[in-house]
Length: 561
Image (cartoon, rainbow, N blue to C red; front, side, top):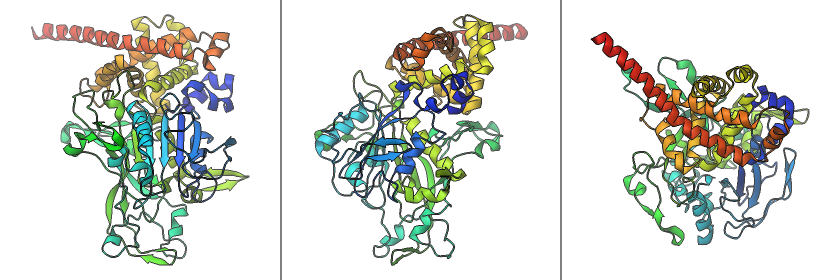
């Protein structure tokens, strides 16, 4: 959960100070392994990732600063200092022999920025990454045009189908192949010529969110949902017809580049039903959904437009492209699937991007300015920063997300808007009190973090343990088991009971027990207690809903005679 604005208004911010909020609740901090190869690095150079790393670690909009391990498949500059933190970059990195080992005990996510083409990963490395993914670890993977990035991404399960790893040309090929180059540069620059360097200016490309739209349409109305990767502060993840203003603040930009690759939705039955047989492994590549039992693939999160004119790349004038739309970001939500590994979390989520030019310094630095030695991103780059931060949030394994839920409830517990209500209501474990305070939690969280956030908190809490995950599936917006009105009532009771456990654990902001818990000690036990209470509250909420419906039905029957 991205809850910085909520935390800053909580009394926790005053007690622990804003600067230390980057270290707030250490257990919640995502543990991320970032791996590059070839000419990519972590320096401030053009093909460096330093600006991206600042965006997810030290920028003022960061809620929970991840713990990063930086690595390179070859050799690169090390150490590097980014955002005030010095990193020793692991050299000649091997996924199979690395220390610490690449598994879900050591890392929550793996981010791969691939430059090299050809075959790069040994079978034992592919096995390590595949086992990580199947056990719940999140993965991000990207390359660039043609085979750039194929060395790391092209043989990995599910990832290999979610992005093009070979066939998108650079534009220097013979005709007609060169016309299939993907060019998103939209500004010709001061000299009115389209050049390779224009990718570094202040004007990004426009992208188009691929909304999930349900409902009968027409007079019956509809509901549209934006993917969480594109959700900006203050936006609602779900919007109903009749309120077009809700679409005005959606993520709609990425850096431009004259030769990108593309991402895919995976929908072909043969692919969904096939086995993964690379690297001596053999398993169903796309597991069945926990709800409905059908296999599902990746979705296109956003589209972009390739419509570039002739562009000067060095001394070569590349021909204009054939204009078309293409998938610029794809995502696979493994949290909707049954576990692939007995006793493990649900499969990890995956995100792919058309190019690492959406992340490297040469494409970002033009969308900001240095002021008194500090880089200030402009409005467009702030949106792109949020895209990166959303990715960190979304890729967290299902069994790690309860920590983020608890962190949010801890901030709510000491929020001025609810402090008085918490005192007046007294025992929040009572169903009536839990529902009342839960309604306040829903209103506060959704106002601070975007409509629909409270509901996602409950889904994350339930899916954090496979014993309660089925309840989360039934409450999820991906399911039509319950209508929106039913879900929101249950969400309120559930968050109210969760908050009740937090209040018991955090009796006072200056209490020694509270300070220990907020610094990370005993945090695991608190998570377990809150999760257990929230699971019980779902059944309680449904029971109360049924009782009210029965009263309503009885009254209607009485009127009908």
